[in-house]
Image 1: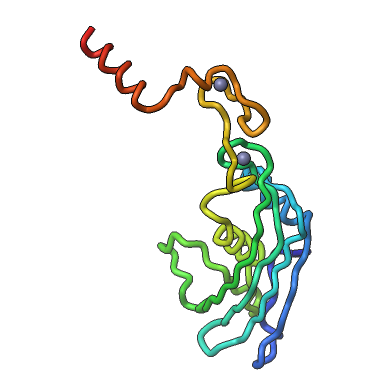
Image 2 (image 1 turned 120 degrees about the vertical axis):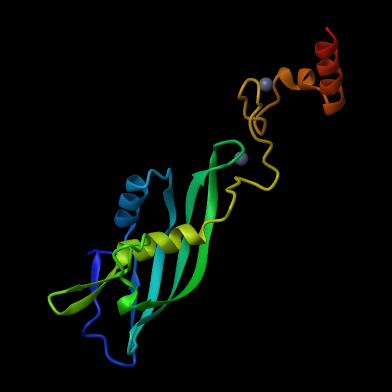
Amino acid sequence: MQKRWLSLSDIPAEGREFSFQDDQAWEFLWEKNKLPCTMDESLTVWVNIIPQKKGFYIQGKITGAVFLPCDRCLEQARVVIDNSFRLFEEFESVEPECLQRPLLRFVEGRWELDLQHLFWEQFVLALPDKYLCSENCKGLCPHCGQNLNEKFCSCEQDAGHPGLAVLKQLKIEKG
Ligand SMILES: [Zn+2]
Ligand SMILES: [Zn+2]
């Protein structure tokens, strides 16, 4: 991702393959989008771009691994990224009222592809719904914030089981 825009005008009819690996560019994107992410295995994006009559067919794959805060305990969770994608970017899809930002632009008689935007979109799509440091992560105590993977805290008994909580509530309502 040395540069943001990739010129598509000299791609032969049979298409051309590109692969991109640039940790610094990813760090820039994470910072820009305020995502607390760090690199584990360098993200690699491979794309095959085939010119079509009305646009470009883009086939690709994003692989690697990153660290993100665990959804339960906030410690680092390793997230494997491995996603294939296929897109068709049409020349005419660029409409002024269209909210979605187009991936293509036409500058000085050449079509160019917004690599940064493509990579960011595909990275976000490749992320799982939840990031967990481990399947059995116990998370943080909702009362004192203790990481329960490391040790138990004293509020444990007090939180009690759900039945007790219901009883407590009943008392309050009566009172
Ligand atoms: Zn965790
Ligand atoms: Zn606690």
